[in-house]
Length: 216
Ligand code: DX5
Ligand code: ZN
Image (cartoon, rainbow, N blue to C red):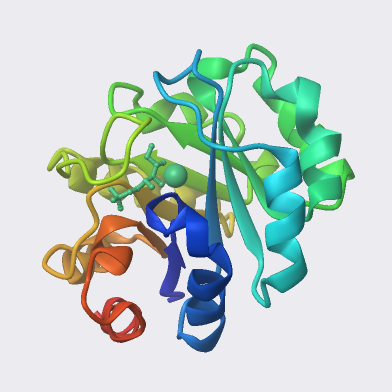
């Protein structure tokens, strides 16, 4: 069972981003989680292509790009060119989900779907094969540092049994309110990738915190 950790740069120090990128490079983290927000799909704006391109020059690990934007199909090529490894799009922001996921794979990236807390995992049962990853939001997207929604455990369990039943190798990622306290239980329920922003960058020793998450 894969246990990956993806620190979210949203909680990094943007004035000293290089320092935080180097820390993640040195750490046991597996991916960089990159949160893109458009101020429409979510009530917040983060950063776009130029920032990601510059980040990519220094990252020694894959970029896990979480698009919190309306109609993400418009920008897939640009995110692929900016250096994305995984591109995850929201179920709630995409009309032709299967078509858009296929386009992500055609660009050579891993295709992910993100589910808001109110969106049931069963809605993905007909397209699991078109997916490399499902990102279950355990908070409402838009901000770091929010409180974990406990119903997430049941969603992970349901999704894992769908994946086992269909025999796909889809990864389960969890994003929002992940802490040192709930990490082991999230992995235990079937999560493969944990995103952590505040828990990592708000801690005294972020590198050590990543190691603790990794061994949870
Ligand atoms: C929230 C973002 C998350 C966020 C997580 O909309 O998708 O990736 O950075 O932050 P924490 O781990 O602090 O909840
Ligand atoms: Zn995210």
